[in-house]
Image 1 (cartoon, rainbow, N blue to C red):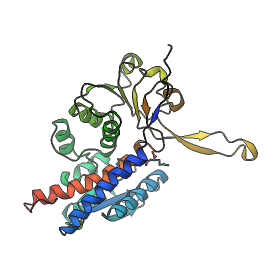
Image 2 (cartoon, rainbow, N blue to C red):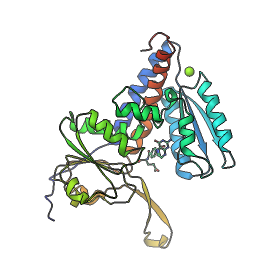
Image 3 (spheres, rainbow, N blue to C red):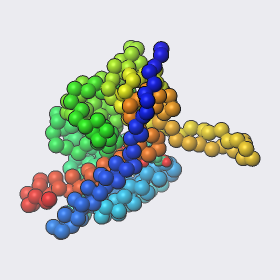
Image 4 (cartoon, rainbow, N blue to C red):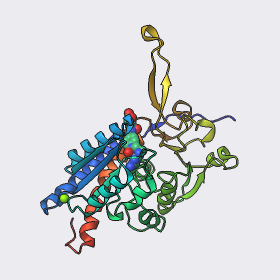
Length: 308
Ligand SMILES: Nc1nc2c(c(=O)[nH]1)N[C@@H](CN(C=O)c1ccc(C(=O)N[C@@H](CCC(=O)O)C(=O)O)cc1)CN2
Ligand SMILES: [Mg+2]
């Protein structure tokens, strides 16, 4: 198939957008503090997965940067499910804790679903609890998953009003694909979800004004999946081996790539997110945003005066 080359592609800068979101959050935290409330975020990390350690460290740093209190709970893989559920129960009851984040993936010894459902939905800053998932589908004002919320913000800043746009999401995970579909539907897009059993997915994706790639397969989406002028959001974070040349030849090095073949897709897309520096930083910014939203909601539910 021949593809028209776009004259120039716009790079969607997730780092810069995340800084704008964090500045808004810091402003909200200042107002809350003036009224005597400091939002609190508990972060629970189990095991030694190096990527999870990096993400948790960044979450704690960003929380501190915007004035949110953070409470770190780190364990090795000997922690039992019963012990973790008991910690969640304590955090659910702790008035200093407004948001609870359990870093995923969890070790195989622990039932992820049981842990997520044990979190008080009002403190579920990941938006993974059934109550929040159902609320999102119905368009209620609930805590929504951070990565799709970040993608929506990037799309709104890039495209403006999304009404009537055809958005194709590649991947139907509970964490990204499905909530992304709900958010785009509420933004008045026509939404198609593609998955491993879709028939002729490329032909469908080529009709899209917006493509969100969230499949977890390095560089799967290239120019042949895109309509010229499409806006592309790449949610994938895949670590792949990189060839090393010169005097260090033979060394093993890795680099991050997305689910989109950036060089190829950039030839036809109007705008595209890079990896790294696209969606990733938005995930953390929206965790902070959700922590502030959770704090305000808890005050409302407790019948206390509304916080600004
Ligand atoms: N409880 C949760 N667990 C996980 C989530 C989540 O939203 N909640 N998402 C991912 C991991 N994740 C956040 O936890 C996350 C992934 C990536 C980034 C990020 O900033 N990526 C950078 C690159 C970082 C690197 O060099 O490795 C980027 O894309 O620029 C932030 C958060 C799974 N678990
Ligand atoms: Mg507090």
